[in-house]
Length: 116
Picture: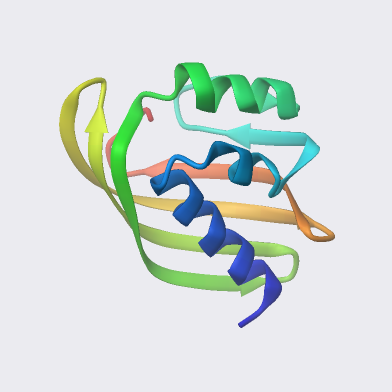
């Protein structure tokens, strides 16, 4: 398995297990996270604040259906099942993770339900 695929798989495992320190270790200090309908998150401090204080998804699991590698990018297609703002949700997602060396430097999330 490619190192980029291992890293993105570890990302989803850590998120689902709520091991946020493990999540933050996967990203560069100058990470940029793009989400639909929201402003981009820039820098590791803002990224950490988002995950620890602002993220509306919780108690969930990410089921990865495909992981595609293209150059410095890993593309993940899957389904999230969990809670958003206290309500049960299930939706499809596509995430793009762009690498700088062994760290994720940029991330884009697209879902079939709008804002996340």
